[in-house]
Image 1 (spheres, one colour):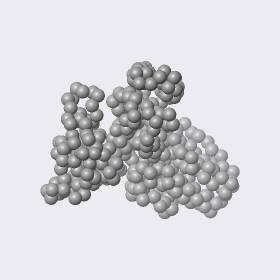
Image 2: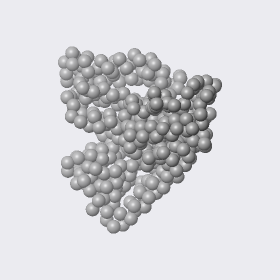
Image 3: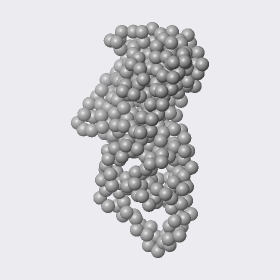
Image 4: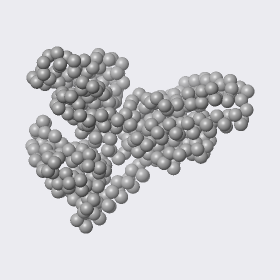
Length: 385
């Protein structure tokens, strides 16, 4: 299982705060399956050596060993390396250690500096194709988070009931429940048998359970992430859940099937079919707004103009091309841009610098595929004035 968007956002907030140097940032592309994932811990250990060398060149050995303890412990966690996703971020300081599984690959990086390197996290969080799926029946829930390519089950945080018993506890009125599991597929499936329960008691429990789930998902997942939420459940449960739901992120269409009868990729395909039209519409509207703004002198795709406007807090929305890197450095105070050679691996990505600055100044950043960009420049900005 993996961390929800809210975990990554909370981690990012803490990473952007002041921390006692050195701040260690390690990024690694990883693999989901054997045998490809067998090389991941080896490459991780190689990056650790790079971190250690960087630390030893600036700090005493004792401080270096202390900073690397948690990183070294992760290297030996066999179970962790058997359940990785597409990318990994490991970040640590004296008062902080975060391990974040990512649903998109990242470039290898190991750096010790006065602050954390967070740009890969920013880009993933601002991608426009992400969504969540709530797998629901009248007894239990599961939550998934995904994009067009991948869907993964999330580990439910404290405060989110996974079962009706966790939600209602002693207030559960429906008696004599037993649970029998039946050979589910990759998502698992189960069948419940009730003995002696009255219909009205069943409906009361069902409604109270759905209310508790809706409230917890909104508080812990939907509101922090802002992601669209799709419900996957048997047709008979869609109406009662929607009747009690107060979640504004719940999309109108749902998946009318028990998610336990689908493989994880089948569930992703059905979810993306629901999300994609909204994704296309959102990107199209942003592109149209950009073209209209540019015609009025309130938009630009010239990176130097965009950088200056970002430094002046004038960028309302910024479209950034996914999987595009423009080597360079941005002066966040003056908005100056220095372009660099493509083969200089030590140079930051100018697009990521722009995205970070726009977010810090209260603007919106949306990362979209090249095919959906209104320009070939890598970025398109809509100005406030």
